[in-house]
Image 1 (cartoon, rainbow, N blue to C red):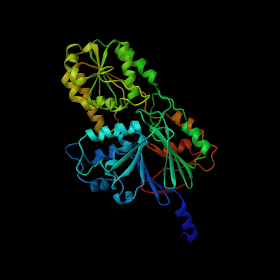
Image 2: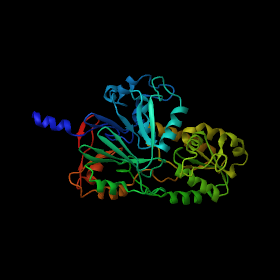
Image 3: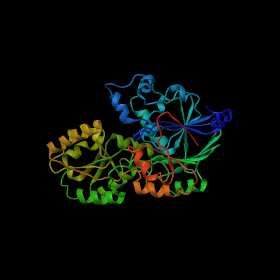
Image 4: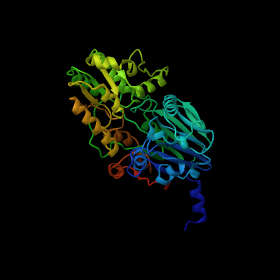
Length: 428
């Protein structure tokens, strides 16, 4: 039994609770940090694989927040009452997708300006369920280097590279010391941040690091964005019909790459509505250099007939979730499909992709996988974390990985690696 003094000491420690992104799950990050009476969320994402285990879009969607609690998609709603703020690292749904269920009014949501634009665009355009709301969220746009003080906590945003613009790591200063929440990142992409977050964390002598490990335990193909461009040019230069590139709508770096490929091959690039919505939401963001619809890329709704008449003059940018568009086009034999995102590895996405493959085979189209990961390769993780190896008693929490024990095996020689359990309390 704890002594009275030990109990008082425990109360004074900063506490971490992991409600998502743990126990072998990639994404769905939900991290509650408590420092005395100050309580903040670090991301509040959707666990897509768990969601698909209980629900289905349109036909079997959840009807209440209680159902989300029951299946473990969110913690008990009372846990999040009295929340002081929510900090979003980047605009992927597995990091922000549950903010529409936050219980309190006027919840302050801090995110990069680009993140805010993409999130608001997605939330306003998609069909909302009855229990979801966005009007109660008070979005606060920030930029790299911006510091936000909430009670006893100060959070500093530092830009990192990822497969969507507006991505940040968070330096969180608490009464017990600082911690680094890396978020999703890579160093092999196009964007080169001015600040190395691992070096900054070392200088600040952080007490803990919460680090993604998406590619730990995976068979990696360590391509750069330039490799993607060169491989696409090599493959699509042999295409005498329609070229189709399947990529995430938010991956602006990849879209710029495909623009270069289209220019090299004297083709026009056509985008479907999901890509168009993101591009329009990001127009005018200083320094982002987003392709402009109508100028740099064309709208599929305006050019679908042209694609049918002159397929060899175009590259269509879409995703395998837009199967109907691809089938309706009936790409002629000799067309080439390029998957330029992660391979589908879950049952539902695998089935959807297999369905697309069946159509491509029926139509006589070729298929290739050309992709550079949006996440750090293991060597990048090792290089970053080794910057911190001389910090005393550093606690390392792996999240966003299918193989947390492999993560532990890689780094337990240098750090106290703590594999989080959902809902358990950890202190720093």
